Structures are given as C-alpha cells and as structure tokens.
Image (cartoon, rainbow, N blue to C red; front, side):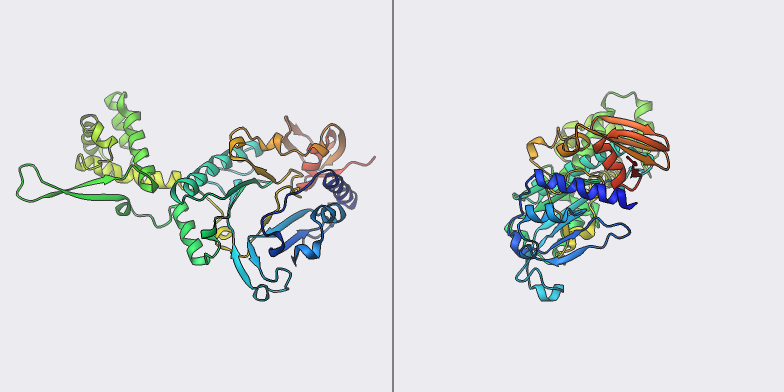
Length: 390
C-alpha cells in the first residue's frame, strides 16, 4: 500500500469516527484493548492497553483513527499489565467466530463476496440454534464482523468462569466432534411379539438436541420419497454407503408402512431402515454442525473486534445486530458507513477485480476507475487498489 493510499484511508476513518459514537462493551474498564494503526508496511498490533490508557473511546478513535480496534473477551484486575500472568484473570465472555473463508462449500476466488456472506449467515443460524435451544443462553450479542462473517458474544453469568477445557466441550458439541450414533438413540425394552424374551426398540428423541436434528433429517428423507416412484426412491437410497438394492427396497417398504412410528422417533421399524437411519444421522451431523473458528471460543484471552468500529480490511462497519433485524440484514448494503456514501473517488487497479457493495456489482479491468467512495475504500483496504492521483 502506497503512502498516499494509507494517508487517505487514515483520514477518512478519522472523519467517520468524528461523526459516529461507539457503545462500549460491559465492564469495559476491566478488559484489555488493542488496535492496529494505519501505517504502510506493518500491521503490528498495539495491545496490553486498558481503557484508562486509551482515554474516552470517541476521542481515541478520532485521534488515532486505527485500522482495526479490539477488546478482550476476558476481564482482569489489571488489564493494562504487560503479560497475561500479571493481569489476574477474572472471567471471560464466550465468543464464537464464523469466517466465510473457512466454511464447507465455500470456494474463495470462485464464490463472490456476497455469496460467501450469505453462506455465512446460514451457518450463523445453525450456531444460534445451538446457543438458544441446546444451551439456553440468554445474553447473546450478534455482530457482523465487518469482513467475512459474524461474531456471537455470550455473556451469561454461567459461562464467565469456564476454563479452556470446558469451552472445548462446548466447541465439540456445536461442531458435532466425537458424536456417536449410539449416543443419540434411546433403547426401550418391549415385549417381543411371539417371542419368549423381550426385545429393544431404538428411537431418536424428538424433543431437542442433536437427536432431534438427526430425526428431522430422517423424516425429511421419508417426506422426500413419499411421492416418488419406486425406481427413483430406490436409486436415491442406494446413494447411501452400504445400502444395496435389497436393503433399499426393504427400507422403502418400512417407510410406507410405518410413517407414524418414524415421525414419533422410532427408527427400529425394520433392520434395513435402521441401517439406513444410521447413515442419515451421520449425514445430519456433517450438515447441521456449526463450523466455528474453534480457537476463538476456547481462548479466554481472545481479542475480538469492537462493534461500532471500522474494519480496516474492507471499510465496512463492525455492526451489532438485533435478532429481529438479522433476517433482513444485508452486510453489502447495511454495513456501508454513511460517511463513505454520496460521493466518488478515483482508484488505480493493477489487475482485474470485482466489487460487489452498496448495490454496485461491477467487474473492473486494470487501470483507473471512478467509483462510489465506499467501493474505492473497500478495494484500497483490501490491498487491491491505490488511491488515484488527483
């Protein structure tokens, strides 16, 4: 990045911070703070600062106009101490990070920025399902990261004292790591019709948790095949590993004859259907897990982006989101700062780039282009363009 580009971005970030206010996180004075200045040739973080060191946050942001701003998940007796051991840890929020670049099915360089963010929102809904329904957390804050995804801050009192091992267990649960089929089924002893000894009925609990998610996948498959012709249904079932034509036909008959039982959670209606259900459950874990950035959640000392700040790799706002507005939220439009709207700038590109932001979707050839300022800032912040010479 050339100095004139860096100076332009530094100045416009300052202008933005002069026009906006930032809400601090709870217990802000007990947290460590860090930031990365706008400097050419370096992205070194300045950290181990307390809020007292920074001063009033609005004044600090307008004065330093940082490229990135962070605060700690952890709270400390002495947050400005120079080493973690000297800070005296008191507790930490539980932080989840979803990054579009790391999601299954996303191909950076092929998927557009908008497509990546849309996939990431789908992953966010999966994560929130775990946090709401399985864990029952209540103090949740959802944040668009300003870059490639979303953060969720959990501040329930019950999570604050959790050490890394306990946080690791939460990670394993939402990722479905180590989840075994046998752990999801319930065994009930029933009288075997025409037998001398009792038999077992194996069911999936439909009330909640991973078992409910797995059951929903089983029922969805039954629904998909309910009106299909036999040949199509059998071909679909044979796509599952270990399900040949004979098992497929038997499982299909069991679906038709035991629909109500299956909907109630019984997957033991026929040995072939049980074998099929085992494979569907494994598939459901792969599809329904929340692909979070695991080290972020387990790290009690993690620094996370400050909502209300600007992301120095995009120029977009790190935006706190109300759950009621999440469905309609479009980061490519709603996270564009007002400061960067309504006028144009000139930028220079060395290679072809696509910019998809603020309603603009344009493929750009190498050379000089006049664009809405938010698009130019996005390209420059990403390192894809330099500020055009006036």
